[in-house]
Image 1 (tube, rainbow, N blue to C red):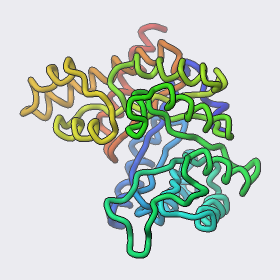
Image 2 (cartoon, one colour; image 1 turned 180 degrees about the vertical axis):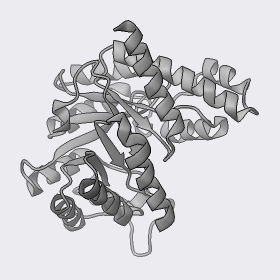
Image 3 (cartoon, rainbow, N blue to C red; image 1 turned 120 degrees about the horizontal axis):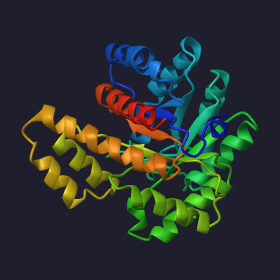
Length: 300
C-alpha cells in the first residue's frame, strides 16, 4: 500500500491529472502518463473527479486502463457530490473489480448549477469526507488504501478557523484514511503548521501528508486558481512573477526555480514526498524533478 512507501524525506513523487473532455485528448493524456512521466518512477498517479461527478466515467476508465496497461499505481478521486450511498457503493465496487486499490475520498466541489430534480448537493449521510472514508472501508474491508485532502491555509468553508479545519482533518484520518494530499500553497510554513495542528488534534504523527505543488507557468491562471482554492498568493511572489508577466518562457523558468526551492525546503523538513498538480502537462514537473535529483546528487 502507498502508506508503506511514504517515508519522511523519501523524495517520492506523485502526479495528478484531470480527465480530458474528448477521446483524443484522453489518449494523449494516457501517452503522457505512460511515456513522459512513467520514467520518473512516481509513487502513484491520481485522476480527479469533476464537480458533481461530471467526469466519473472517464476517471474510472483511465484508472482502470492504468492498472491494465502499466505498472503504475493509480489513485482514483471520488466525491460525495450529488451521490447517495447506492451510487457511491456501485462506484466503489467498480473500482475494486477493475483492480484499483487506492481512493482519494473527497467531499468535492459543487457544480455551478444543480441538475434538474436535485435540491441538495450532499446526501444527509455524506455531508463530510469522513463519511465516505467509512463507507469505503465498510463496502470493501481491507481492499482499499484511502487518502483524504488537507488544506494548509484552511478549507474555504472554514472561514479562517485553522484549528477547526485541522480537527476535521484529524477526524478523517481517524475514520480510516491512510494518507493526506494537500491543496497547493506557495510557502512551506503553511504545510508545517498544518502538520502540527493536525497532530495536536489527534492525527497520528506518522500519518503521511503529501504537500501539493503547482508550478507557476501562467501568471493569470495561477492567481485565479489561488483565489478559487483559498490559497494565499503572497505579495513577494506576485512581485517576482509580475516582472515576467508578458514573457511566458521567462515566467515558466522562474516558476520552476521557485517551485524547486519550495520542494527542497519541504523535503528537508521531513515531507514524505511531493505531489504535483500537472494540469495535464509534463515539462515543468519533469524539470523540477530533474533539479531535485541533481541537488540530491550534489549533496550525496
